[in-house]
Length: 312
Image (tube, rainbow, N blue to C red; front, top):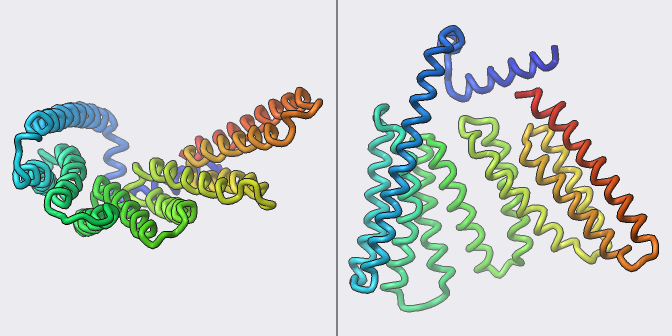
């Protein structure tokens, strides 16, 4: 009964996030064959769209590389920044047409690559020197404003991804210019990404939540280990890994479960090597460590089966 209630709650959440009416949900459940055909056509269309975009992107990059040394400063800026901006406009144009909607994502991704590259090229060609981080900061601000503004208007998942990316770039660069310790920067950004991913997982943009969970949790754990290593509070890292595993059950995230489990196993290996490698009881420690690995792996699988797999 509990599993059914959780499943119904998931359906309600998805319907509310995507603004689906009761009639639309019921009609989709009754006409499952038509939905399957529509899904297969959508996958095929998306696949060809991505392949075509990759070919176009590769062709443009090769052409630019072949002619780069013969181009003037203005031509270099035009061919990079101009191409990116045109791709961005094409992405916006195709968004409003159901027939060409699948092409919007490749265009937006191409724009997110070419536009920042063009801004950096422009600064490199026309600037008078200085700290390169200021150029990265300028590029990040421009892209963050552009991507964030259009995302607020269009609510497109691709734009949510690029907005978060350039937001991270902006904060990393800004805090680096303020000469804040790199581990503190990674700790702050990692924690922020975890919170953002939590919000994404309960929104129509949940498709990108797993990726940012991975990046955020990795930054959090790596920076925390560097800060705690060889200190009296080093053992707190083990508690942080356990906390991450607990959060994975609440967030229903297999990515967090994987990262938390791997970090816990890695720390146990590190701790035993540092403190017991030269002891006579090292073989016994290896056996105990192996048993611990098996136990932790078994617990992780139970968590996945009980709290993650059954809830979907």
